[in-house]
Image 1 (cartoon, rainbow, N blue to C red):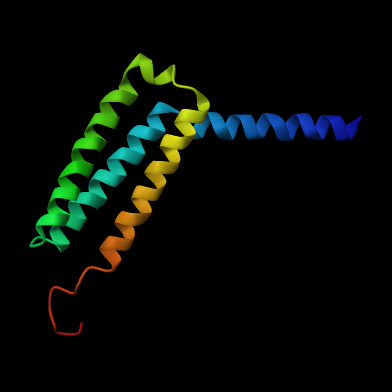
Image 2 (spheres, rainbow, N blue to C red):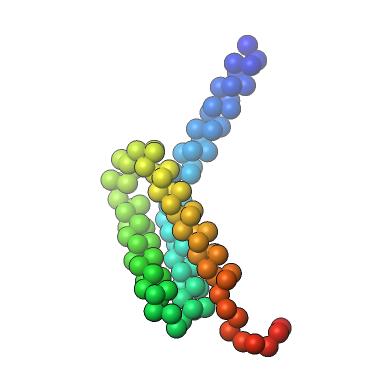
Length: 111
């Protein structure tokens, strides 16, 4: 009996965690974080045209995602689609962080 009860509590906790992860508010926050990282990346690599275009595309897409998360249609997306979108956002965030870390130093002088 206690095993069944523990399983039910674990299932309930997992469901709550999933609900929080796919909440539209979290998507908006993640989109804002990625947007801020893109702005920072554009400041670190101001001369490369290809990078500037990619960053411009990221900014536009994050604005669209923020707008989409406000709409009722977003809540109608399936859990699977929201999880895929969340995974894509996480990968984009990781790529931006990697890009920022690999950016050349703005000066030759060691700090």
